[in-house]
Image (cartoon, rainbow, N blue to C red; front, side, top):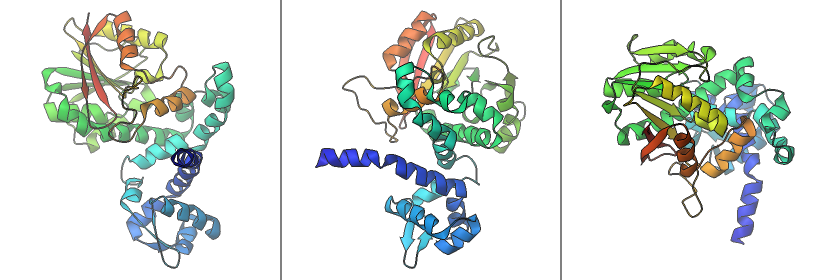
Length: 341
């Protein structure tokens, strides 16, 4: 029976995630957080939805303990629904929207064929890669940026507790988005900061960094193509979840540009989830399963792959780096420190 229950749970998994998407997209968690418990009729009116259909969705989320259903079809917020609020800064609600939005869902429908052809399922479904899609679609782009900022916030406190960035004079975050991570590094360790990403992402950084209380000139902003040139001036390069978007060949090219940008004493601090080898724990302390998440990355990103520690060591060794140490955190994130070989 235990094995059968496990299979039923997996089968029902996408039902729950789609109910979560619908409620979060409609702003139900926002409404419950702001106004408190409300009847389904009131929520349907505020969201311009069909009352009976909305009720079935919300009841399902109540059974999953995301919402609380009270008598007379009244729904109340919970600790879980409060985490899904999307109108008070980056949250796991944005991450849920990004991972379960229609363009991603369409990609999963193409995975069966992609398994046979090796194509990227997201591209088969949408005609372009996920980064191009989020760049060209304002709603998806905004959700994506906030989702990545949430992941940074989610992991930053745990990272700062175990890894000392104070050993570096200047730290550059390559592919650092709005700058959530480098902001915390600079504020915590009073070092100099650099942020490098593509132009459409960096243009959102100044207001974000200001909202995080970062002095105006504390972080230098740079735009460009990581395959062409990485800015010089840092003695440590941080990359968070960045190499997982690229196949081994492209990852090698990125590391080559990083090597050119670093001084002889420079280091790369790779911040990634590490896919476990056989026999190692499969679930991280925060509940993320890297091996399953790796399927999402493979489905969505050309060459996207979450790797084992041995695979990272090999890629870096081929680019002239050696692994100095691995520091694990209390989330899914681990810090792998590499120096020039």
